[in-house]
Image (cartoon, rainbow, N blue to C red; front, side, top):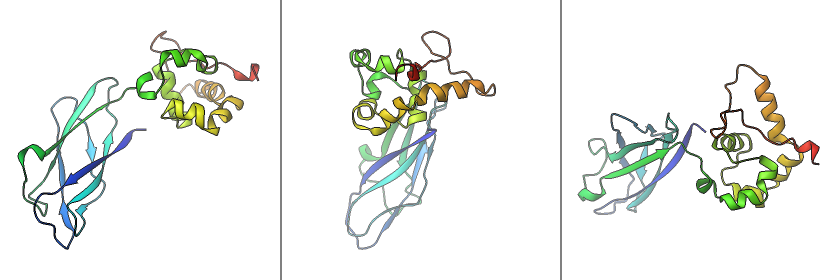
Length: 192
């Protein structure tokens, strides 16, 4: 994934009106490690309410394991609102391109109990490959609750797709950050 969606909740101060009101958001990013955001649509607070949620697209940070930031603010010059209280004017967004056991929902102890036999030693690069190939964003949910886990194992999907990837010399190497070598998955066809 090169981008993700953030849902921003907004609560408007003042009187409720019986027509939708436009809200324009803008970002103010720092000079370094600026998080790039996209506003994919026009935003409106619906009639007869003071709350709304807006989708904002956040692009993946260019460098792994570095925190990127930006501030989301209301552009009052283009919105149907005036500024409210000072402390509610800015949303501070932070994003980091990082995959960790904690973020993926597994502990080292859980990994070594059984998954290590199917996938080998933990590696961030290897897990990124699994996320990309299998759409598995929460390991424990996928491992215990999804038919696709068994399909991936029975079909030897990770091993075979990685071998196919490696065979194409135009693909960049997927190096294990722990060993400096290509990531590896066990050939499960030998086990099944």
